[in-house]
Length: 418
Image 1 (cartoon, rainbow, N blue to C red):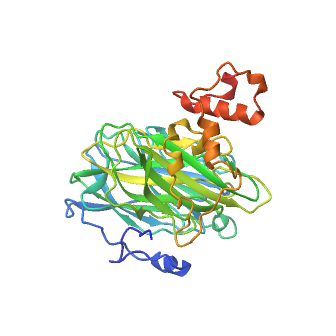
Image 2 (cartoon, rainbow, N blue to C red):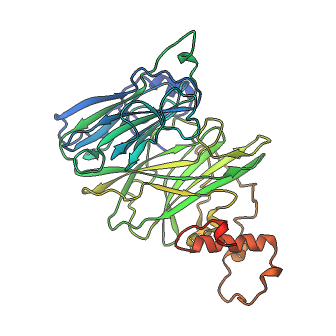
């Protein structure tokens, strides 16, 4: 069973919803005191009495970091899941604005705030919160390095407000949600980072759908995943993340996003990711509605996100911060040429909700992961290259186009083929 990052001297028990409501007010114990624990300070990054007026408003607020580098070793959230859908903390080279602004692309109008991106330059995700998750303390000697020459000159807190009733008449309230950061000036031996795997795509009505993504790890140094977080909305049943090496899968983490969306300890302690490995994730979605559900930015859409928190021995972090695919119905692991050697070894529990006994089986394309389907997709050696494409069935043409897109050095738009 997955364990949460330790707090209050014990591991967080998720057996019932009442527990996490009680623990919302509890403080987290440090997994290991940071190097230079005596040289620490707590810094508040809170919304300055904002009054969002429209549901699904995204607001951002910046804080400038000094010239000397600092290390974040603990995150304490201050928010209510009835009001805030999620909080993200970004590191920016240049923020999208110098005061509070609307940083949501989908609902920029009618918010009462000027609009802009989260970061005008150099965006990196450092932390994420949702569903009343508790505070997070990093392992000993691990910290997020900010300021100095890191390229992170500002911290920006983003809050997605799903319910704005308390800010409208007659209540006319205001909000000071945000984070308290524990920071130290003492250099930490291990530098932390976050890598986000996710998808776009859609979920057919009355179906179970796999939303999948993968990216190659091409850094010249090793990273050590130590925590993970899953994020989806109402349809997400379980999300799992993996390191793939030589066709063999090792689990980074697996959890249902219907429990507090906190960072949990990696399910494989001591895991190392090195050059040539593949990082992959799957969100298993169950749509009992009679309408298609799309990935999007509002609470009425869906999301498929797997966050991998890692450390590096030294001062480097991964150059990339995101790994996204088009998602279904256009993308699955099964039609990704780079996954050819791994596809038959997908763990049987990749779509198993922790605590359940039976994995969820995809119904959106039920035959996609059968052995015969692998042969259809990948049987290219010795193929008759003089075959008349006019005689291809629509399904064969679709698989051919997907193969060509995935095998190239980059993805192409359909317009570039026709």
